Image 1 (cartoon, rainbow, N blue to C red):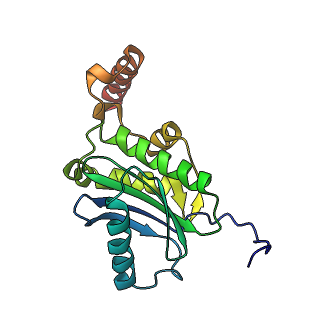
Image 2 (image 1 turned 30 degrees about the horizontal axis):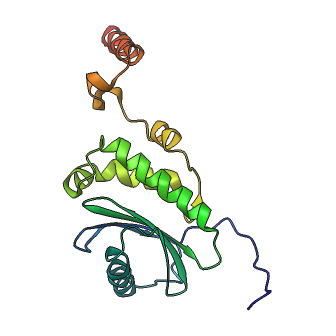
Length: 179
């Protein structure tokens, strides 16, 4: 295998996974059905991955079962991006950082399991905007946030700029005249 050239591909991500601090799956999206065709195999891999990474939260990368897994953890959640063993780790890390930063913005820096589950629909939409069927679409959290179109109403007034408050009021007035 040494010296062998690999065919380049757009399908860089094999899976995106978010787990809580007890090892339970919060969100999982596997893009390569050849790697883990059944739910049982996915759960076994997740259990093994959690046991290897929970012991060493300072590390950022692990090779497990022929896959490259990059991860980031906070107090309650662990975020994983999984790629093939030949995949460029920097590409996987850029997906991971985008995922982490986007969810951090969605949850308004309240990175807890309950908050994530309360906003699971928006989080799943963000995951779809970051990666589509294993192809990395976006690596900038601000552009992902703008594509999922969080309403200004969801942002608290203290976090809005004056222009955002003015634009929101302007839109509300426009809609009230149309009714």
